[in-house]
Length: 329
Image (cartoon, rainbow, N blue to C red; front, side):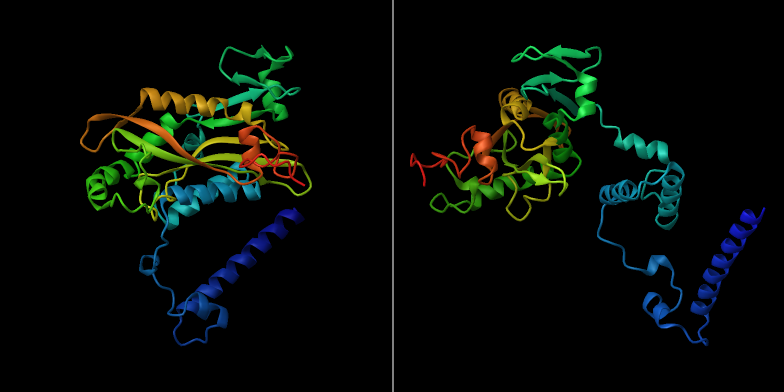
């Protein structure tokens, strides 16, 4: 009883403090504390009079989800946070936890791939009905569930799903169609200003689209030898100032040390070859279905990632230079 009474007193005390601050802010004659002047310099204004943040609903959803993960919110706290956000800005987030989690359910767009824990050889994609498979290199039997539990896996976000979303839902397809003829007329064949001006450029939209790839590692923890290696793309058909806005994630590796690129990039290369040969199906603004071939024209990597991708020694080893045959010092 004493604990309940004490908690009730604290709750009433906090509520009275909030009420006092509110009353002082709306009383024009009463002196306002300096902190309240900074927060409400012209009194208690309506929220609709405040300048809204330059942010999309998707960005707000991502920030909210990051906040939930950082502070390890319970389901009750998560539900209250969603209700609070939707009260301040109606319909800015899904109405409840169920619909919030439905957006996070990406099993149909993200594939989980496992590899051998002994030799890092690629095993295959995790699918329903298949629980284990033998490693083609060392013949060790790999259990898919145990591999995922132990971290011997990586994720592939299919381009056949993400690229149509970029072209259709984000308006990139309409933008490229509207500006393709104008860009061709402005290009001077004697002046090379960008990758799209070169003779080997393959992205003549909408029959083809050109991508640039970046692969790099990011250390996640200082105390543990674990790193994160994403595979990103940008669309070369877009102007340089617009190119980095729709960044496309294709693969994500998380594990000990550096990834075995012959394993990690195997499903990445397979899908790129398929989209280059068979094309990408997406819906144009006119309502017609277009088939666009996807070409990877450029891969950008630093001096650490480049030898991993090319499968030779690092830059500080003997014959580690990727541009000449000098042995090194």
